[in-house]
Length: 403
Length: 100
Image (tube, rainbow over all chains, first blue to last red):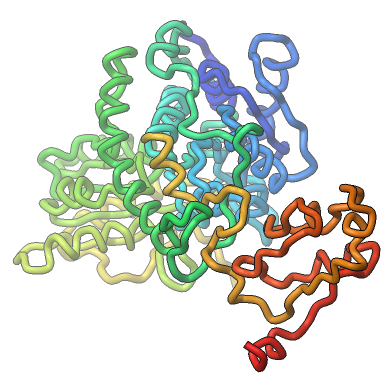
């Protein structure tokens, strides 16, 4: 069914269709309308789930951790400082291997306070052991939410579905709401691999020692390092798993085909812009303008950011002359993390090759600073030349310092 | 992913003595029980068992008198703290080393 709704409602409808059983969330701008919609659906009887109102984001995720351990399909959502307040439980959910899904409605982090969009919140949680998927539009928000549950439950790793605050969360766009019967076919009710059972008491995630140890039966059990190594292995296994899920999704709903990256006019491109989220669709307009001038440029968005599909990204990008990475977040003291990750993926696959693409890194839109199309046009155009800017320093678009 | 696989991917343990091996070697203080003072031993009836109930490692038996399994007892001292008749005292392990 086609509807015109906000990005937050797209996420809420995805959560409803996924037959989530427990929702625990604390409202924070710009995520608030998503949790309001969920509480409305549950209160109105349209969704059979327990909504647990909490006093903080830390508690929200703690409740989802407990509910998932008890065998329920669980969901939470947050933004910015709310996500940062969850940080300890975020690491816990990953190490506990719980197939949670959380929407991160991207917003800049304080200080100074900002309620506006950038990607610093989810990027700052990049290394916690969660899968991170970035949606570019409303259709991708609802589709990705459904795929996220399938992926989380397949590899037993929690998933963040990230989408831009305001730009997507509060704007209204037409999108297709999948039929309930088809969703049930794609994502059957959650059957946990293991769940807490009062008849078989057990301790989950108890203290480990530096070495492996014996359990009460005298059998060897994994220590901390083995458990963490398996998290890394299973994260990497999520890369092929996402492809299978995307293909299954496409077979049922007819949408998909780009599980990792979404290239636009890249086939013959000398230069390729790269970014996360809705900015990549904004850049399509700029690519069209430059193409009209005869500049062979394309744009690629990265949909799966963690695990990083390094092989796929390097294969897609290594043949171009230059890569221009536009980012709404950075690792302070170095550069944008996507630019670093792309360079790392390219280095190990092209270090002995005569040709390697240059990589330029632009930082823009922090704290909701307007991303003006003429500014994107100017930056991309001057980068699409062999004599353009080089080097690893970050180039900031839209700064307004004054004397 | 199978259920068994899941449990090997996290730190998973069941209640009972012996999780983490022969943990008796961790002990610095040894709980020593005087059966003459122990309540159920005096009455020959299961009237107390507070030590059995409180032991976080399940190494005290529900018998008269209660028996402590020193292979696994970590010497936390909770039994001595909780015993209403002060039948359990904590004794330095080093004093046993000299004897044994």
